[in-house]
Image (cartoon, rainbow, N blue to C red; front, side, top):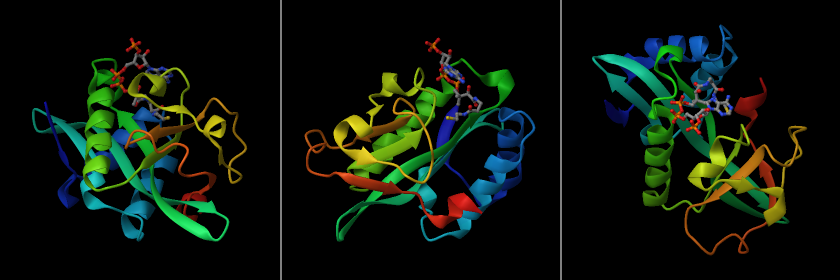
Length: 171
Ligand SMILES: CC(C)(COP(=O)(O)OP(=O)(O)OC[C@H]1O[C@@H](n2cnc3c(N)ncnc32)[C@H](O)[C@@H]1OP(=O)(O)O)[C@@H](O)C(=O)NCCC(=O)NCCS
């Protein structure tokens, strides 16, 4: 299996993969399409897992902001992550997430946020974000599902404020 940057020629397969992984719902596939067209899209942070010439997993990291008073700080949000149902529980999601986190660090970002399963993401080092002074007002979600990952250790106290997902997420 190979983890690589998504190509335009992968778009149809990535659409279908997300459709199947999210139980025949198009919402996530459509979200990916909108993010790709937005200024928050960072092409090298759209990752695919390829096996035998088929896309079996996909993870999309894109730009968002933390608003701290007058200051805006660029951060990354992870959404969505999906692995083809027949290929789940083989570690593909984990490899995609780890590679994405590595690339985010290389690009110089400090934090990755997500809303996700509280039993899945802590093993990568994601922690409940509100505990570290981050707020989320756009989605009414419980503390345990709103998570943050610190890419550069020791920064969690250096930034606080409200995470704002871009408009792209709310169409
Ligand atoms: C979540 C998902 C991306 C994980 O991919 P994966 O390749 O199966 O994950 P891995 O093989 O790396 O890890 C499997 C682990 O995740 C756990 N897991 C998988 N789906 C989970 C879920 N919905 N909630 C909690 N844990 C989950 C498994 O129990 C397993 O745990 P273990 O390692 O302790 O045995 C995949 O299950 C998927 O596409 N799900 C449908 C789409 C989705 O819900 N995406 C995430 C949105 S937050």
